[in-house]
Structure formats: structure tokens, C-alpha cells
Image (cartoon, rainbow, N blue to C red; front, top):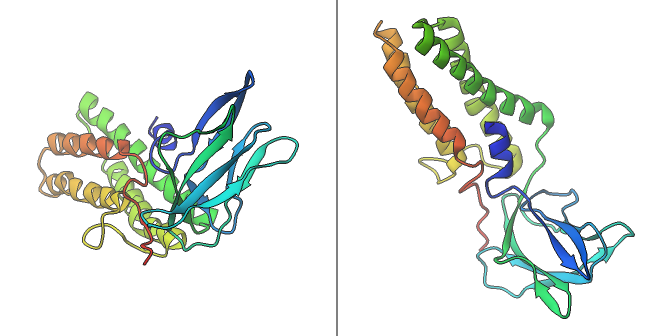
Length: 243
């Protein structure tokens, strides 16, 4: 559930929909995250006459115009432009009906990232979700049987620490050339979510070390962790500042 929610929310999920042109419903996909030196296609699944206007995000400059190209299957624009990692552009999409009309209500913001090898990205994702999965298992075990499997508890924390504080910074370095962009160096909410989660879990760890009842502190930590996981990924993420 959390994985699905993260995929369909947040500022990096593509904007999708369809537009009616001469009685035909043509689907479109407007990307909001692209990997540098790879295809970054804004496309319609059919033939349209249109163009985009784009410029650097938060920069007062002239818009650049690019026309859609039809390849026999789709109309597309490939935005493989040369910009630094974590840089953002904003673009508007125009399609010809009776005249040219803008499709998007507000500019689409797109961020460019570096390529992250799968051998780094996949363990990061798996470890973070395994941590939540095991925490959920412990939550049910603790609340329905009043027992705590300490081995699973410590394994879950190990997965979180490795996934969030080892693979996480490495993944971010590949993507944006920054190891840490959260507190106290920035406002990256993904990094701050990881830091907040670590601080939250100090309470059940302390209870366990002091041989106190862990149920209340664990339930508190688990409840706040689920709220943290519901925050869309990449909100207030790393952003290159153009001069």
C-alpha cells in the first residue's frame, strides 16, 4: 500500500491524462523527473499538432519553444537538454484544436537527476520497506500477544539504518551530487523524514535497554513512522540553484 501510494503521489510522478481532439481521446504523459543523458519524452499517444514552452524554474528568462514530432505512433518532444543534476525546468504544453490551447492548468515542473545504478537503488528501496514490514509484524505481535521478538526488532532497525543512512546518501549522491540535504544543511524532506524516523525510534530502544514496557513507546514510534511514510517522496527535494 505504501509503495503504491508513493508511486502515484509526490512531485516526481508523471502527469497523465487524455485530451479530446476531433472526437478522439488521445492519452498524454508529461514527465516531472528525468535522468540526465537519457530520453525524457513528453508525448501524446497519437498524432497532434502542438508545441511546448519551457524555461529554467524560478528564473526570469525567455521561454524556449519546441514542436512535437510525430513518428507514426506518438507525438513527442525529447527534453534531453544539458542541465546540471537537481536542476529544474518548467514547461507548458499547447495543442491545436480550433486554435492552440494550453493543456496544463499550471506549469509542469521537471527535475533532472543523475543515473543511479540498480545495485544501489534496489537495496535502498527494499531495506526501507522491509523495515516497515517488520515493524508492522512487531506491532501486531506486540499488541495481540504481548510478546516481542527482540531479534526481529533489531533486524528491522539494522535494515533502516543501512537503507536510510548508508544506501540513502549514496543514492542521493549519484542522483544529485549531494550526500545529505536535510537538517542542518537544507530542507530536503526525504532526508528529514529519515532523520525524524531515527529520532522517533530512540524511545522504544531506550525502553528496551532499561527493561521497561516497550508497548507504548513502540506504538508511538510505529504510528509516527507510518505517518512519515505517507508523506510523498521527494517533496522539498534537492534543487540546483541557477545563478
